[in-house]
Length: 121
Image (cartoon, rainbow, N blue to C red; front, top):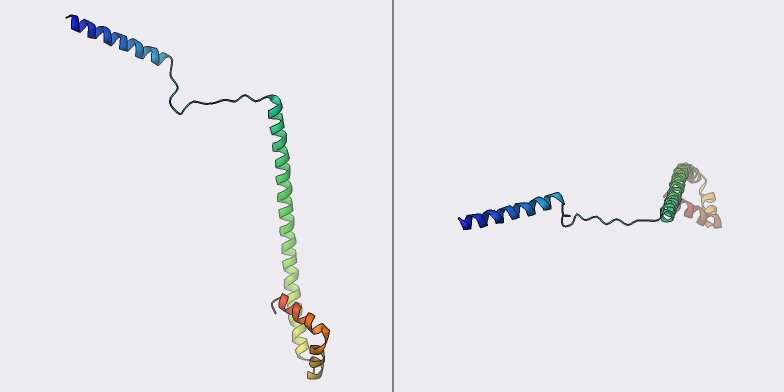
């Protein structure tokens, strides 16, 4: 009987311990949060820096769009020049042989070849 009473007391003590733990929850391992208090000045400085970075990002995006438009325009001009050079080359082929030889010996011929090479003709 005494043994049963001792075990009953032990169980009661364990139940009390568990109830106490249940009332005041313990932080779980790995779930602790660390909070760092920052001053208003630090928060304001960070907000200003964020605003500056956003403005810089807008500026970069605007510049990127401007460069893309400029590249598209230059690409269109390049195609126009290429088509014109092809026509001129075909016209030069129709010149008399004497004129072609004279042009081939001139200093302008090297420039002409360089331009055709540049445009892939």
